[in-house]
Structure formats: structure tokens, C-alpha cells
Length: 384
Image (cartoon, rainbow, N blue to C red; front, side, top):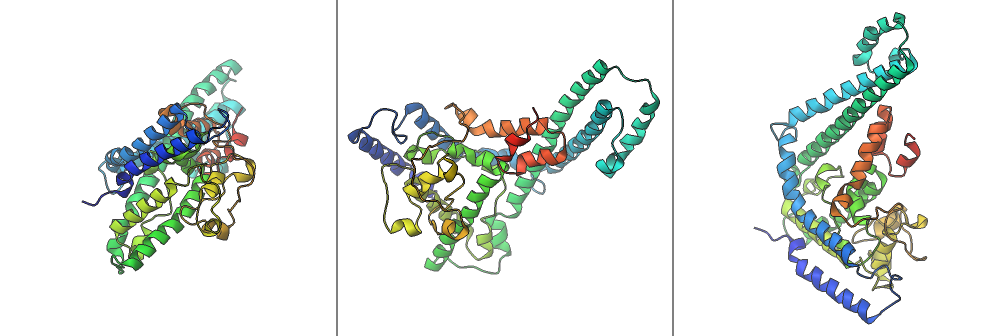
């Protein structure tokens, strides 16, 4: 059984955190003026999320495998739930429009499968007018039911898509189909590490540009402090997201075990760049990701938003136009901070916000946009 390098490195993580804390004590500043200083509640929250991220893959596998189409026996049931909820939500939309407007929408505004609803409701045209209060009451009830169905439809569809995608693009599955095998030499290691770093850049960038992915990644950005413990504040819901598959490396001949080692090396590298104790590193800044570059990435300053997505190499950001130099003082955290150290809120707050937005949306376009479009799109589209 191969050792997970990220787990084996835990003693080193703790030792480095201790050294950073001692450095802070030997370089005191006015309390509250250095965001890198350790604060007990914040540090404990980060450590809790770190432990949760180690346990989460085993828990989510047991929970998600049974409802993964083609893998578990309940996969078709989840598909059926999503389809039924989508149809009922659309029917609810039509009925609510009828109650609100006193007429039916044009046939082209609803899917063909729901047009029968129009014919069924057409007889209402000649019926006596419904009292406005009764109509408003009925609309409120339908809206609540419609909201629950809409959230169910979007959530179940997203779950089916993410679990199916993960199953189809796993390293073992794709390696079995590849005619290539790079072996375990230096060349294979180089392809694995460089390839993972390149794919990580695009996945990390996507995690800031799609709200679905951001709901997973936001955990890592939720701290208003910045020290080595922040590196351990990791997501616990990566099993229900979409990504450019790292299994693509397997198609290039990288063995699945080596892909896992590349992942571990990538994560371990990122640990040391979460510090304010190290300022600038000269020529290293041109090629590699450094504490200075990554402080920018964690900044909520307007000029720093969604910049410096690289992991080991900063070259990807320089090549693809997302690089930003550190110049002004970094303000850490989110553009709207959550104001709590409760790990349950840290892990779920963005999912709750998405569910509320989907529930309040009145069209399928907005429902899916609240999940798929950028995080900044949501506030402007919320219904008052």
C-alpha cells in the first residue's frame, strides 16, 4: 500500500506552523495589524477543515457511488427524480403565470412536453374571475412548491453530471484504454508533475469563474488571516464538482499511481506559499509561484480578484493573462466575509446561497445561471 504523501507530511506541516508562530512572536507588531498572525478560532477552523478534507473522499465515495449512473444501483432513480422535478417545476411555472397574468403563455415559451398543460388550463379562460387575494394565496403556495422542485431538479442533475463525469474520466479507467505507458522513470515523473500543474491552473481558474466550482473552492478563501494554517483550510465537497480531468494524464501514458503522487507533490508545494513571513525571492518570482504571488491570489482587493491561479509554476498565469504583481497591501478573505469560524458554515454557506437563488429564480435560464455562471453574476440577478 502506497503512502499518501500529503498525510505523511502532516508532522512537517505542524512543525512549520510552530516555526512560523515563533517567528511572529520574535517579530511583534501592534495587535491586529498583521493578518498573518495566528488567531485561535481561525486556526482551529482551518485545521478542522483540513481534517475534514482527508475524511471527505472516503465518506463521499460511500454516499455517491450508489447514486452514480452506471456504477450504483440507484443511479437511474436519481436521474428519474431530476427529470420528474424538472417537469413538475415547468408545469408549476406555467400555472403560476396563468394565475398571475390571467392568461396562458404563448406555446413557444414552454417545452413541447408541457404544452398539454395549456390545453388543460384553456377552459379556465371562460371561468369566473378568481379573487385577487385567493389568486395571490394560491401563487404563494405554488411558488413555495415550485422553489423546492427547482432546487431538487438542479441539485440532482448537477449530482448526476459530476459523479458520472468523475467515473468516466478516472485515471484507472482512461489508463486501461490508453496504448501508452511511460513507466516510472524520470520522464514519467516530469510529465506527471508538469501535466498536473498545467491542468491544475485551468481547474483553479475555473473554480473562480463558475459559481458551482466556487462553492467548493470558497472554503479555502474564507479566512481573513493568512498563515500556514490557511493552507490546510481545504474543501470537503470536491466529489460533487466538475473539472478538466486529471485522468487525461493517464491517456498520455502516466500511470494512475504516479498521477496520485503528482497530486500530492502539487499540494505539498502549495503549503509553504501561505505565509507573510517570506517577502520577495528575486528571480524565483519569474518562474515559480511564491508567497508574494499567492498572497495576491488570496486578496479581496479589486485588482487582486481572480489572479495568480498557478500552483508550482507562475508561468501559466504569465502566459494566459491572469498574473498580477503584489504591490498594495493585501486584504484577505472574501468580498463579503461570512463572519464565523463554524466549520459547518464555512463548508456550506455558498451552497445554501445557491439553493436560495435557484429557489427564487423564475426561469430555467436564471436557475442554471445561478449555478454555472460566475459568482459575481448572482447579486445583480436576485429577485428583491
